[in-house]
Image (cartoon, rainbow, N blue to C red; front, side, top):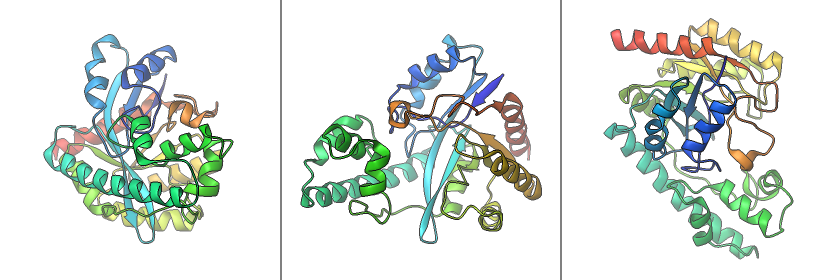
Length: 286
């Protein structure tokens, strides 16, 4: 039995509703699934509310937060969080405010460059609390400026391109502390997704994050090679932290990534979920 502890819904930049995600998970026979939308917990009510329909699936309430590390950002997953925690919602609200301010700037930049796009249609497409660059990319593709969303990012929206704008982000230690106050575990998401994926660099960042209270690392991810997964499992053992894994499923916004299986080879064992529960129980006892 396999699991998926990294997914996105229409509450952020996914294209499946929280309940649709659960239906997909059931169809694939997953034993556990986490909903980890960007900077919002607004989908967790629907997600957890459907638990009775899927008694064979362990539901993990989560969130994905971007944090600042020097001149770039990294992503931290909060797993097993209490979505009603006031300090968590306060931080997420501040992050969303920064996200919305950046979206306004991106829209203005794109308009000045001649693209037919406005912030109103971006917000309308997003629907939820967290419009973001994937929604800009989707509109640009639909209007024929680019063939794929990836091309829109590579040529226009990613860091260093003409449509990119920075946003204010919390520091790693602050985000990890808030996740802990919400009763959750803090996991470094897709650590091999950056420009420098050498063991030395990843180990250096991981040492810093563990010093801030990081609980685990996402060792299983669709775009990792088997060698990268082995490297991350070894680093988790070195630093005495847990491992997690998931597809980063976004629906049609990432057409080559399927729930549970990623590109077809992802297989996160159920034992990963069981070990995370043990880690969480130890933290509660202590």
